Image 1 (cartoon, protein in one colour):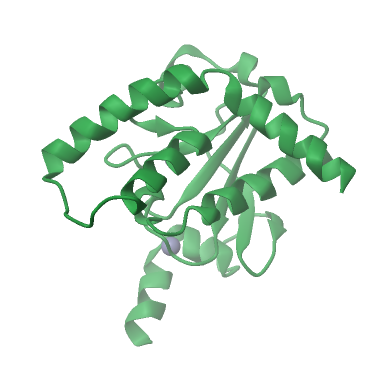
Image 2 (cartoon, rainbow, N blue to C red; image 1 turned 30 degrees about the vertical axis):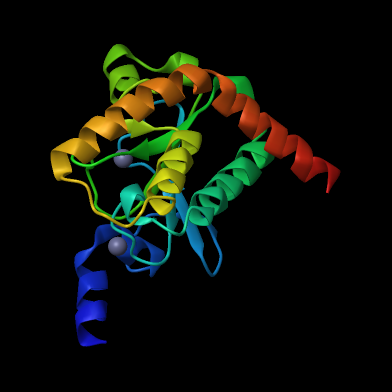
Length: 188
Ligand SMILES: [Zn+2]
Ligand SMILES: [Zn+2]
């Protein structure tokens, strides 16, 4: 208990979720919190986090539904903000390219407003930034594994190969996915 609460105090995103920082909270429920990135990559740049401390997206083995939860919150907000869903970038940084080790979904729009360096940092066809679908595919693959932990290097290679295949398929599908989910939301 003590160690858990001191870990929460040591993590800036846990502190934000707990209301201990000044960051305005744009959305909060029992599971998720949303606030603005302190270095916005475009006019709008939100971070959707779990209130629970989860280190990063690769720690969600067996819990891929958390990715859906984060995307659902993001989609609802995008819809509320009347964002152009064809011009949004959504995804996770992957270790070691992680600035804060508390899982956060980046939601950036308009994507067309971003500059070169930003485009690189949040590049979808990269091993360091995963679209939600890429993250889910990776997690599914881990969960479906035989439990034998592959060596780190082998794991990274597999991940890379997987990303290349997956992201070829993903390309622009991710935003269509978001659009589809928004459509589903509005029919519910
Ligand atoms: Zn945390
Ligand atoms: Zn990040």
